[in-house]
Image (tube, rainbow, N blue to C red; front, side):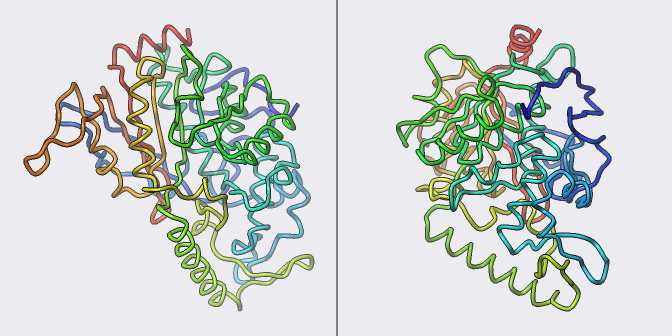
Length: 402
């Protein structure tokens, strides 16, 4: 079995069962905000506090430069993809080559999370291959969120914690990270039959059937309905929604990224040499660490209305499960989409008015928080909302995790 539950956790010094101490370096792709924002009587607001840009969560395994020697030792298939930067002598990979990025991320999963080395082989052709460091950051922030509702001040561990990943995709990445790091049980929902088969194959290959339940969402218009069983209680939900509004929008962005990589490769062609087994050029890790690797199935990348419409629908439907979940959350890729999404939220039933006209009925929530991850144009925001007040959230933790 490749994944076991952690037996102990120090909040400031997490160690994975098969992991080196968290001092080994990796790329600067994520940042941890030290503050969150709670909704007040004037409605949701965005945290204006400073962020520690370009730094991952303090418990993320990835804190600096890639330790290529360690990764190739854990996953030898990475070796043919290694190239050397002539000006620095650093080992890296060709970031414009999807296969190199795919193998590198597999090596990260094997070395740091004990995931089966055939992980990438189980993914269907064209499926989105997740950049592991950014995905791990989201999981760690979920742990922080639960910790704030735990009376003993510790991160709740093990099967007593139940999370839901909405639209898990073929990679099932969030559930396998959540179970590997914290031992949580996870419900992984998905609508695409091919992705469902892949996710289940990954779960089976890693002997995680008792911790990860891959469920089929039969209706594309629903998010929680049809996934959560009647009366089922979960502690949090997470989601990386499709953020393009159409396939054409994705294709245009894809072309722009490829042009950018081409220009970057052209400027670097004289400063990179390859190892004998692989002849290529490279771009900087930080510029692509949270990219979508220019691939993915249609349902993973776009939907009508993009992420704004998707998350709004999630918020509306979450109201039906307000006493069955402590925190609902989602990634939002564009910060300027937050006001559009939060326009349907209201606290204590106070409806907002716009241009003298009443807006569509709003969803009453008790708390809204934001957490920024990433840096620069690769930054995202986790939006988190709860229908429980502070006292009720503390009672939830005492009831569920004590």
